[in-house]
Length: 156
Image (tube, rainbow, N blue to C red; front, side):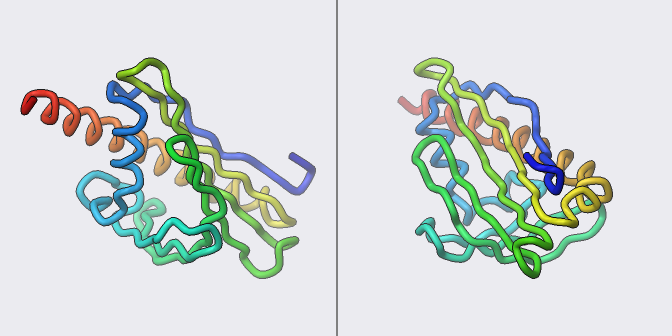
């Protein structure tokens, strides 16, 4: 990353469910309100270049934001981006990664790449909220996927 860039990362979190199962939970945006404390509403058709409409919580405040889907690599990566003004002003890419650990487990982590002249200021002012929110997504995803996977296994 250059001088006008910063990165907000979360730790990897292990999820005891198969990667394809977790991917289905992660991409079922209609149900985000049931488990995702950072993004309680989302709408997306998962076509590259299409809008991703989100209701996100940044600290005590919720706000609506529209981003653009820029990566969809089943079952490993989903990413969306947003320009705030011109790209040189502030450009943000949020990547959500799944990586297989075994046939029945995977890991999840988030990387937010900020670039532009205001990236350092945004990271300084909001980086803590972003990191906490993205970590909450990982914990929520873990709990949701593991619970649903256990229920599925118990029904078999």
